[in-house]
Image (tube, rainbow, N blue to C red; front, side):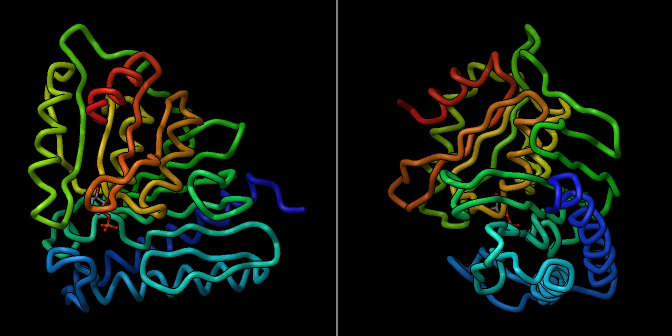
Length: 266
Ligand code: LIP
């Protein structure tokens, strides 16, 4: 019986190898292979190649497991464990040469749906910074092996928040209204372009909170476990907006309810 810590070790080794490949392909020049939900929602050839590497390595090590990835067809496994993978989180940054993107790999047990799964292990590897965030269920969250924790509450100056905007320009008015509702709690707002790294920034106290509509399970599967193991809270959403996008909110405990209520507009 493989332990959650052993799953995290496997994911760490694979994430590092995948990050090296992503960086190498970036240096060689990146080609957009296709668009998905909108013209702004791009996938590069590197996204597909990196996901294929991750999938191959996982199959070699654990052929009975399932797989859910951003760029390829899902596969149901016999082991009850599913790998939820974003090969390059921050694809638009990656395509523009902005040095801020990550490999995100999570192992979950049960139905591979965010509202139903039990996350066992999560790894987010900053492919440019080389920072390795990981968490093992019940055993804490770490940055390069050192324990990390969320900010228990924002400073009196207000919360440093991060968010993202959808690929569909029609959704931007709603996103901006959402920003307007949360700004009374904020000292400032950041938009870094990688949800996985945003969640890890909250987990290690570099941000007080994060909110965004439109994330997919692979964007937050690993970062969500890292947040909760770092003492934070995350809501992965259940009520889609007019564009079918659910809201993800994450922060330390003191800010969470206020941020969730304001972001939702409830
Ligand atoms: C991205 C997220 C980002 C969000 C983008 C996209 P991708 O993931 O990391 O926070 O704003 O819309 O979802 O597509 O680069 O894996």
